[in-house]
Length: 144
Image (cartoon, rainbow, N blue to C red; front, side):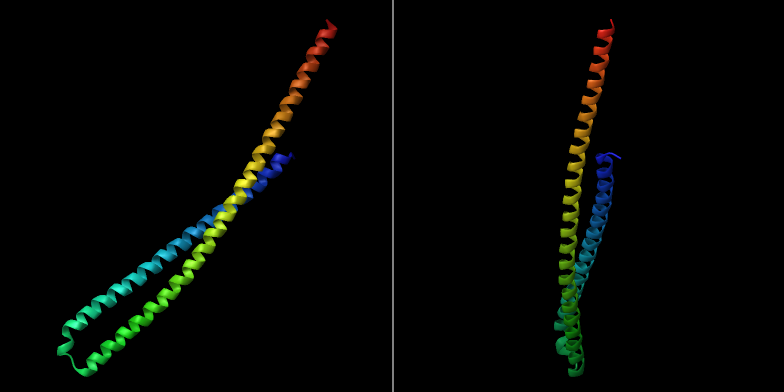
């Protein structure tokens, strides 16, 4: 097995690793986007609820007002938890991105090495073929 064939196998393995890393990064980005949407939806819901609460505040009993304030606090806690998830997912997303970049760089490096090796082997083969043709021509010329 030639060196370029062995390198070609390594390139295929690196290519597979790079594709897996790219898929993981894409999934991480999708998860990050979903969490951002959920945070924004919860913030929007809280803003609408607070706006509605402020309009009808004068017509409510004290117990209802306390219940609404408690609900707003629960919304705040939910938002805080989602924001923590968002922060953790952003870090995970960055790790996945760095992994994908590293895998891509390794793939590119191996592809370059493979291409140089294949080119060198082809040049050597061409030189051998040319040498064989030159020898054949020399042998024919000496026989004549």
